[in-house]
Length: 263
Length: 263
Image (tube, rainbow over the protein chains, first blue to last red):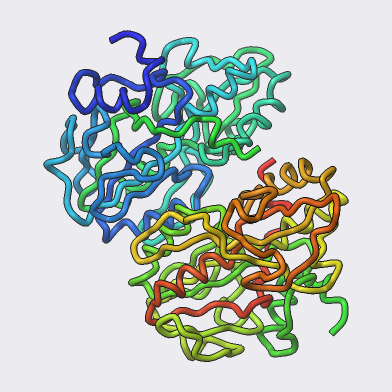
């Protein structure tokens, strides 16, 4: 499957929907925002929406579907969250029960889909500003850690923030803050710069999710709120049923990255 | 009642709660963000929360209380939305039924309070940047208009955006966009610059809410999304019971204006 970077979001979703592509979406439809997915039944949706509203850095909502509707009308009015992601995970009472390529058979008429901003958008902005991203250069996943930064509880949803880490050259740290702060809809500026211990991370070489990358001499570890937080929090709350995208298999929206820049 | 500008938010709320002050709050506790209030029963709260999430420019949420709790834990953990506003309006089925100074007798254990950002914050930012605000200089209310800009529907909540207008000198228009864009949590950048007709406003001299102000030679009318929108939309949806602040009588939060700046 070549040239996925140059295809439109609609073309990518069509390829996924017709099972012609179901791989990781990093780098496809370049320039368009991608989103994390969480689907919950209506009984849990209000508290989860409240949780996202109270914790916007880790849980920046790009769209929330009308109960029962699989159409993300703000970010992809012709999309369908049941079929347009390459791989989904079904969790029952907080436990992974199966991984599927189409959730139409699982869809119920009181379900609500949450599309949550993804760091791909601000990673592009960093690269465009000449700030390299180590995990992209290495072709691996970003390292993610459970921090001791508490989220604000909403109903049954509670827990600490998961953060991603990127090593940034000392000379680039200020610019990295400026560039990512332009995008509050996709996690915004960093939550912490420097000592991992301060935010409860004992060993950078042992991430809780993703792959370890080196922090070299003259570099500073910079931490951003991570979109894995809402999934981790939701799973901890053990809702009867929850559906998410599989890691790396994001929903591709029609909204360009730049449209999320506030200035 | 003197020196209200220099008092802390907690002192102001205490004065209001003990009926020592119940006037308009413009200019009190200077430097701290104030908020619009809307209270709905839980049955309407999910759709209204969704409406705010989908229409963040007119409905920027600063806090949403846990169902049944009157405590805005994010913005004023020692505050109480039932008593800390000087004047409230009770709407039944979309009609104003009474105006009261304490809503404790009306509070029900499934109610949810929405605190929505207010333009006072970015008005201060404009003034600090040397851009005068005519309605403040005149000591009147800002002119507000029903525009033809459609909001995105959520459940029963639907309608057009209400916008406020400030005349800005041509030389200051770019700076006004920059300054207010820093504050997405309080309406952010303008929604329109220039011709009122383009957004469905026929006569600037006849605002739908507030007071008319002149637009002089060399000035451009600049329009921002207005916090009256969610109230107008909610009243149009005719919920059985809805409680709001009375115009100008805002909730004073513990959060400084500057804390809402994203950069």
